[in-house]
Image 1 (cartoon, rainbow, N blue to C red):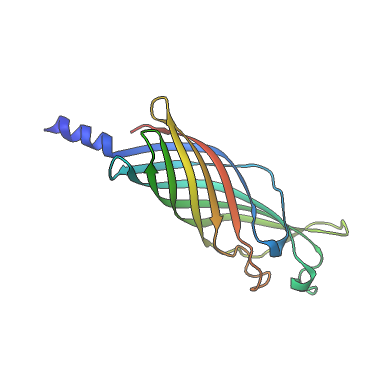
Image 2: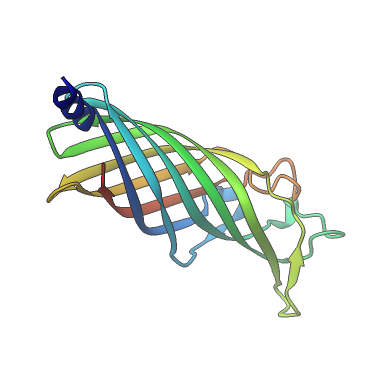
Length: 196
């Protein structure tokens, strides 16, 4: 009986680690986004198989997000935010919860919500007139939400490749102007390994 229970557990539940690179930035046109350097993502993942084609996957991740944007003149308060570009450096703990649909034994699509918890931030204002940069205290929202869509491919033994797009739903910097949508989205590529 114990052997049979062990086999069932191995078939239904997996725990693993993952790590990779990510590309992030503001996706709002109001903030006139610019390209940003690559960052990284790593953490743990757990998957529970509901059937041969369907499973639920949850993760605990650490991610770094960057964003570069300029504020349009009509949306800027000249008394508080003079002309310049905002450089944001944000660190999060992410909690994705996704449904996975398997097209076959190795290839799956993933979809679901994600909670982003801010753990560190630094925002720098680079002035257009090339004067000294200023560190801003914008107090980003500590809790943010995203919607994930991705693909995963399992290969070799217990290894997988994962491509994911995380679309930010929450305004990152609401203090700049409540009418500005400043959501931050991420495209990531990861390699994972299931050790249980």
